[in-house]
Image 1 (cartoon, one colour):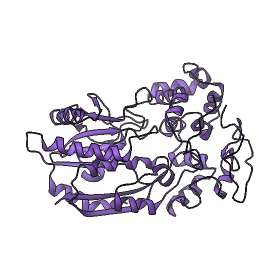
Image 2 (cartoon, chains in turn orange, blue):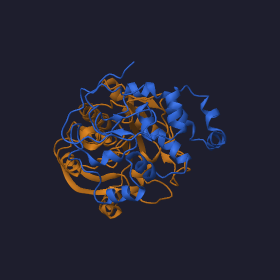
Image 3 (cartoon, each protein chain N blue to C red):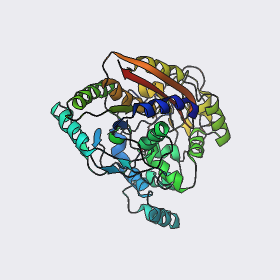
Image 4 (tube, each protein chain N blue to C red):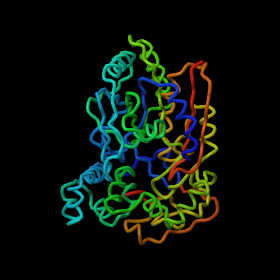
Length: 237
Length: 174
């Protein structure tokens, strides 16, 4: 599994981003069932790794970018996306594992992070169309920020997987591959598993790119413990 | 009140955690959430039944938790990311819980994953024979519902052919 990330680690090392907007889902860590925000943007200066029951993952504190994040929040809310602003949040493996896969084992994360938490735990999550449109709004927000920053956006979420109920273990490689081809799709839960619905989060990343992107890298494998795993690098031309 | 029928209710072996289950399972999930704290895990282990008194649970939900009926908890509104905190408290790995939910052994489940996972073909919707469901605890392959309150001990009926379960009158929950 991990060899598939070597190319991408080098890619991001060369790119030297200032900020990574990471679209991810919380796994009953920062949010319980007391509050279930559909989109929640992390506007704090830092986000400590959470104890998910086995002690916090041994990774550095995630440094936010409060000014940039607040700018995005203000911009997209005025652009009619009703997202929740989060000023205090612990982050779980949904956020820190993608960082580890891209940046490796480090003492300090090499860039700041703006976490965008998406509800994919309770049905219905936001639709794929809505995620895509939010991505487009984020692109405009980033471009309107006065300071010149190099920004990457990670769309995360396991590909097909189901870890709940008698159908647990489901994997649908054909679906995953067609998703990577099209990055537009619907019947997530039936085809990709109850937890595979996490894939809608990729569409926010996709929406933040113009249609003139090029795919520069793709990796896909089964399994990584219980899920199909893959990633794709899309760069603006 | 009976659960309103949803178009995703025919996904086999799947309890979609929707807004209705979120409401129904609030007590289960908040109980599980409390187990994130080490001191709470210790109190719970000392006297599980008393610990549960602090949460608003139906009798069925209490029994499902105390009996570690993993599928039943999901059916009654639990969510896997929350119930995973209970299984972690029990010292189970995720794969062990997955094996329990699917009626497999841990080794059998791990081998299935290494072979590329459970295939999608034949597993999209009800009405198609799925041999793997026969062994799932309490799962009634005919009605596509857990077959009773004592889901661990209930013997699943085996249904072959391509009959359809949509018209079933078996209540889906209590």
